[in-house]
Length: 488
Ligand code: HEM
Image (cartoon, rainbow, N blue to C red; front, top):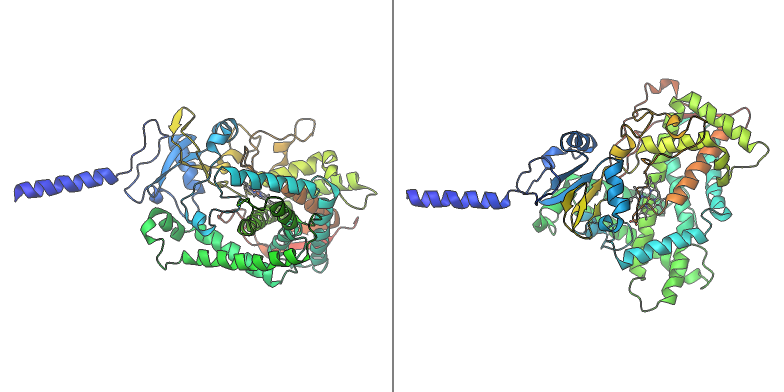
């Protein structure tokens, strides 16, 4: 009896020992983890950013966490970040492939696709098409200016009143990317936009929430009818909505004379009929990816920008003085005007720094065994870029913890961009919409500041600058009072 008990005890001890998470040799350090749960208890799922900063203070700029049973390395600070995603670019250019969101998106599209031919070809295609549609040229600017007219209409209707700008900026960003993708814009109450926005929001929420974490940790629950199934349903809804739009394009397009990105893609499919990389299914997911990536990011940055400008009226006024001077006698701003507006440039970049819109970037994955900061990291390790740590890093910014455009101005008042500015990330997976986003932010902010004053309403109390955590950070809902400028 005693011998059996001792044997049983040894067996249990052995099983626990096997399950106990262990870090490989010379792997970045991190907090002790529990079997199965890993370091989940070290992170608040509602907002892990402060926890990640706390762990950085204990374990340094490169540390590791067990997300469930899987190992992830968290990279902090500009030095380690650059070593990984710029210097050792391809080693760190993969995407994890065994997560909830990979199953939901069927490993198609571009954002979450692993480093390889399909990703490379779609990325190259998107960048080339954006360029041909006039990124940096007039036609893309015109598309943005067209949409700005709808924003102005909304603001004009609210002169002297306080309005909630969330829906307005969200729809503007969505419509600009829709113009590029489908050559069309949608009214703010259009079914396509309403349902698309609902699906995007729900998918983001599930992906960021506890159910996706359970899905990733316990593969055997993946087929069960649990709340994460809603994510799959939403993706199907999106697929059907887009299918209708794409079929419409197939009927109306003139081959060889593309009017938008979808038609360019259909031309590309004609050119390579036997290439499975370019297919209807791929196009569907690719368009959804670009629409998703180009909407919340830009609109949340704009929302943060106007929140700060209202609460720093002297900065708003100084922008307006510069805009008035540079645009004197001109109808409207063009993107090239930025070269004569160092202060406005500094303000937009400072808005992007404090917005920290995509705080953990998109998870990367190592494509081979590699090294970082002297540690060994095996192929297939999830990489979390803590961009927050770079944007607030002491020693990199004149004023790391306050909203201050001086962060981007030198002693001569010229615009300078410090190395630690990376809201679009860097390296081969860097945001492919950077050019479009920068043009949108500049043209929208300049045009609106030229025409209107934005005022924090008297009855709104003290502003709360703490953002709401999600795939993208968004400011808490607020209202803004709009006045027509006397000089406009
Ligand atoms: C202020 C606006 C934006 C910000 C802050 C932003 C930020 C980012 C970040 C941090 C990444 C992850 C990069 C990485 O994994 O290293 C990313 C990826 C991406 N972004 Fe943006 N983005 C913005 C606007 C846009 C727009 C307008 C588009 C539309 C075309 C877009 C399309 C994409 C795509 C397709 C990727 C995936 C790239 C890849 O995996 O190769 N983004 N973005």
